[in-house]
Length: 200
Image 1 (cartoon, rainbow, N blue to C red):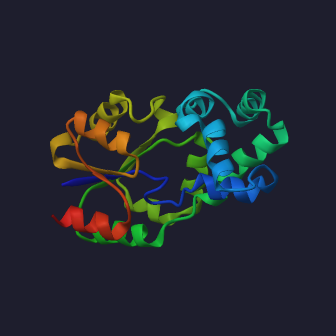
Image 2: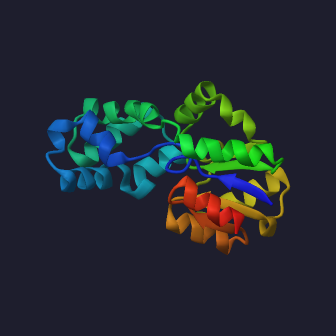
């Protein structure tokens, strides 16, 4: 069985409300405001941020587009864009799961919606990414989850059988899309739950 990992929210910490509260505290007086600002900036990873994930907009123009749309200053939006890499800290329990699976000889890959600057940062910073046989970053494929084409692209590129592949993602609609593409999939809640479901 091949195992394919998502990155943000599975292998790496990703809590946008916490990120915005840290970077723009004057804009985030409470939790409700944090969630509203997350929606405004990231648009559910569609729109402007979706273009960033897809590799069709660079950080500078992205900051200007978000500022025009939200009323934030360009400096504020730039602060958020530049602050994301530090937010993407490894989740130790999932890294341990990754190492366990690698030790069994199980084929491991990744499939992540990830802008190119962040992909480069992760590759340069974390040696454990070498445990993967390969993977797909959305910005390099020009495709994003949950589009069916990105699942087909990933399977074709690495030559694995979707029916013998299990995809781990924290986002429900990405899990549903993988299943519709013929993959097995687990919605990731934490490493312990994921380990149990993989064992089952």
